[in-house]
Amino acid sequence: MYFLLSAMQNSNEIQIALQAAENPILLETTEELAVAATHWKSASILGIDTEFLRERTYRAELGLVQVSDGQSAWLVDVIKIKNPEPLKKLFCDPDQLKVFHSASEDFEALWHALEVSPEPVIDTQIACAMTGQPLQMSYHNAIKWLTGIEIDKEQTRSNWLRRPLSREQLHYAATDVVFLPLLAARVRETLEQQQRWKWLEEDVNRLISQSCEPVDPELAYLRVGGAANLDPVQLRVLRELAAWREGVADNRNLARGFVIKDAELMKISRTLPSNHQALSGIEDIHVKTIQRHGEAIIAAVQAGLSSNVPAWVPGPLDNRQKKLVGEMRKIVLSEAKAHSIDPALLASRKVLEAMLRSVENGEELPERLSGWRYGLITEKLLSRINNSPESVATGQ
Image 1 (tube, rainbow, N blue to C red):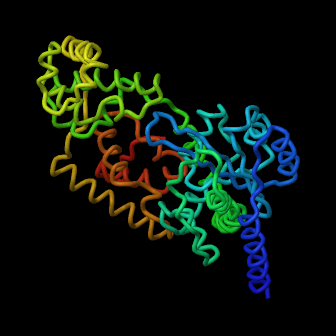
Image 2: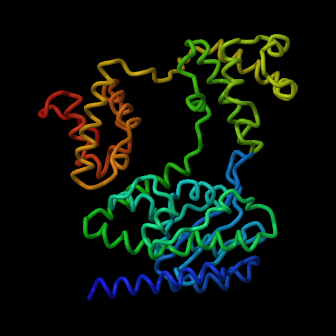
Image 3: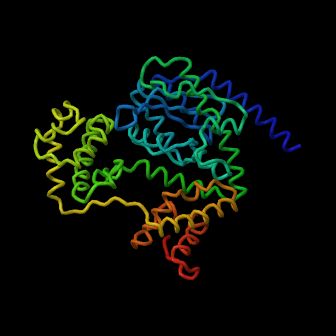
């Protein structure tokens, strides 16, 4: 009888959510936002989503913030509303749980646009993974898993900065948020039964912290593909070039590739031009790039050549290390199977490689391997690296 009642209740909640998506409430003035905020105060759980554009800019350009209690959907036009204070208060209210799905870009967009970091928060993508679903489960697949409903994806690549927004965009935006309270309730019940709710809180807090951290310009070269193929001098030059580009992209709010592309940075780092003529002689360097940035590029090359500070990029693992990472991977797979969770939730191969390098270099372990993962897999992985169950290194 309980399962029948539960299914009937879920069916009613699904229909209510669908109706809310069909009739979203668009908020375009401060007064409308203030009225909506009075409704939000009565809800202990609110689904949150954002729509933004980030094709040509360094920072995500926020266009819309969606809020839903599962019964109504409010779409906050942050472009038209000049004083979003009620929205900022919502994100800082300690008594209201904010529910996102795959939240890292949402956190970043909200931080840059509103200078707020929401709390308390859960991410249902991570939560679903902790119940046994794939770690990268999309919102659309999560809702299909929860309700059996296929959600339209046609507006995913819409221009959310252009006004007016179409009815199709408004419906899509509302659908992206109305099911979050129901999804959160389902996964919370499961996670609390499995004593994993604290796992979720820990991972989301880490996600929030990481999403608000600015990129260190001095480490921007590590993002450039192929950097490991450069010699030490060329790598120091690439570090200076990438740091310069990061500063320009940030100051002008331009995507990095619109300042200068990675491939161009690599060619300059290999060629080491000392003047405009040498820079102009490099194949495929756009003439406008030289006109706009030629002096700064040459200055960055000279700074890299004169630098005594080593630049370092992890090289490929040797055969011994590859074998050891393979054995570490088996430990992760075994523990993931034992706990019925996606292995990627515990540790990716990239994290395992970073862990091995950290131990061998006497450095701190990757932060991801602390907390609840430490007792679950980190101790076993350290034991395997040290090749003795009795000699477990400390990494907490």
